[in-house]
Image 1 (cartoon, rainbow, N blue to C red):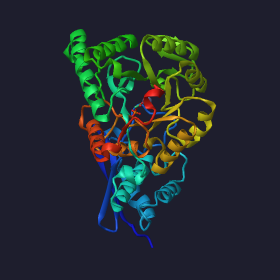
Image 2 (image 1 turned 135 degrees about the vertical axis):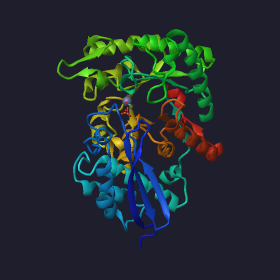
Image 3 (image 1 turned 45 degrees about the horizontal axis):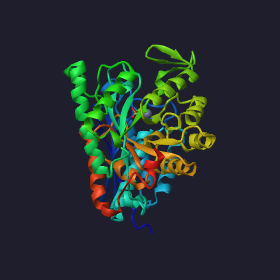
Image 4 (image 1 turned 90 degrees about the vertical axis):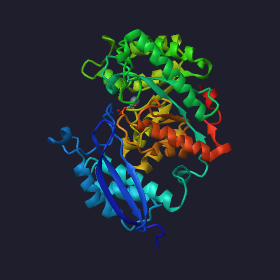
Length: 424
Ligand code: PGA
Ligand code: ZN
């Protein structure tokens, strides 16, 4: 007999932080326990992600999710009713079967991941454990946050080609100290950009970093370095970039465009070599386009830093299985809605660990206040998180949940993981 029986599944359309609709799902257990989850959405998406279902038409510029909501109510919900909510893998398998497509385009990956996550949350409530502990009884690692403090690319309205310029406070002693460090640098950076570019330059982009009218990568890096120096925390910080190079690449000419210059893979690699010689950049996400395997292989071999695959892997176990053993990248950007169920995302994490990869758990640029990635990053002991700057409620909800977890874990909490600092 199922002890924790799913007795109801409902969904509704809610808003994300860009005033776009998204899916929220409720999963009821034994008619009295409610697990709820919101589905985030990307803008700088990879071509190999599981497919969201959007309504098209006039409403919300076609972005409505009423069809996805209906699919939860009419098809996915009824399929899992009666199942034991703690049986996550079976639930996810059932959801996949109901859809039947490889990219979850029939019923919508946004509908499917919503049910999957709400079930996990309901299960954790049913067994009376915090979600991170429900996922893993050995969960104890608080992540090092990669703070995205200057925004470019698709996440803002300036002409900076790289998408995210980040500080990575690997030298903090605790997660809470990392937030103090981020705050100090962010405030110094605000003063610097206002002085250099005027007060409009301190407006922020989708992930809370400054949307400064800088066009040159070196200029953005110089501003960050200056802010870090003035903060007095330079010994505790290294730097990171998300180049999101899929969006710099033209498959027709097979060239990247950076600051107006057309570059082949090798030339862009040389550019990175010079850049990391000048600045202590220790982690780069998507330095090459999603299908430029050669670029990833060479970057991993020749740059000697963390090379993260975002669009390159799309949190897809098949893509990781094929590419990771070759040495293309050495870390995974983990976004559950790129693949569409929690158990497949956990499989992606497992495969990454088996290949000695690092994992960085990530928000999407279109988030809600749901802090679920905070529990998940601790649950998989990933040790790294990317969830924007410490501003705007959809970002602070994650940081605040991590502060709660840090307090709950008390002396068991470990920042970054056993040999995290050595890895950088
Ligand atoms: P997205 O992008 O959430 O808009 O897809 C963020 C990223 O590229 O990491
Ligand atoms: Zn990315």
